[in-house]
Length: 278
Length: 285
Image (cartoon, rainbow over all chains, first blue to last red; front, side, top):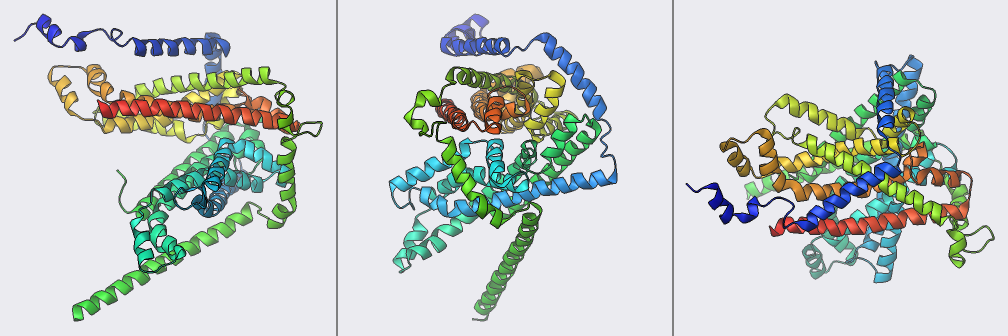
């Protein structure tokens, strides 16, 4: 049985205080805390504002219960708006996927025409991705007017950027051997892509599309805030007119719909990929 | 011979069944798409007639008021750079504070949401449902409500980011914790350690670098989110962006977009570097 002192000598690194010997980590943590304090100060976040706001929030939450759509006519309006949200997500996702499929080949190192094309394809996808969905929605509202069509186009633009990147990466990691096999038996480059690359690619792409559809259901439910269709317009209107019970019903509706979509998509994904990825 | 034949028949049948399933799936999808197209008022003629407006919009935001290209006079293009940089700084700070608060809350809650660390099943269940709620409600919706409660400014935006971050990170953190090596936990428990000892000395050292990496990824996402929270009055550069878009100050739109995209790209590059180092450390140790 060794004493504590002996142990301390043998495993000196385990016993030293956390700030010794790790000065850099300590400095980084300190800088982080200082930046946090600076943030609270410059953003004018005071104790009084937080306490007052929490009290106000508590009042709002009390007013939200129980969730109540009001009349049956309104229930119908909300359900239709939710349906519109789902429709925007579906059409937007599929449009982007259809466009991104051929463009993905241009942006992949192994199937592109030349490096210049690849470079520009990549940068275009980056730019499309860099602009937020709400900004895209505002731009398209200028073009096709208020309404769900602008939402579809906005979603399609953003997703084109996302899919373009994901698809080209999936194409780049595809196994080359099947392509060689087809070429060696006299296949053309079209048959090589069709029978050599596509079968490897499709399950991956489809699961990515399903993931995006899930995420897009959420996005589509907020683009209405700027007037691009879907249930978001109803939400922002209810906040302005202080109808909290109806608002909590709409939020609940969004929550349930999103969870159902999540559940369905993960089921579909497993049936496409076969086994659970875990 | 006969077995070969029956196998061939079975194979052909399987192929036919699979084909039928595929066509059925495509048919269902097609019906959904047509129906959705009708609901979302998709009109190709409208698109075709107005697509010129899109290209002219892009052309207009690329030109200054005097008709010159924005690149010809960058000083004039970024005339409000002092104000805009300050707003971008505010946006970054909002993202930072929101991520830090959210990540801390997620750190506190993730152990309660992991089956292997917390034995009480109902605690795990309740924590998980809370995290699910926090990440399913879009942060814009939280922001809308918080703006009413906390009044305009960065505070409601930060809180919205923090709550959404708690939900998203809490789930990821809990997944990391559920995949750890259980032997150190046995060791701590066998020497009489409490729940806190268990978390501090057996779990945290295994998961810290992964947690930091996920938190950085979330910071990236929150910078993008913070940039548009201003649309509902929750602070940051979004309010100004919405204003210039609504008032058709074309060259300002492109200037702000370039500023936001460039900032996001820089943040992405930096955090990716740090994340690779963090994860590399874990593999090395």
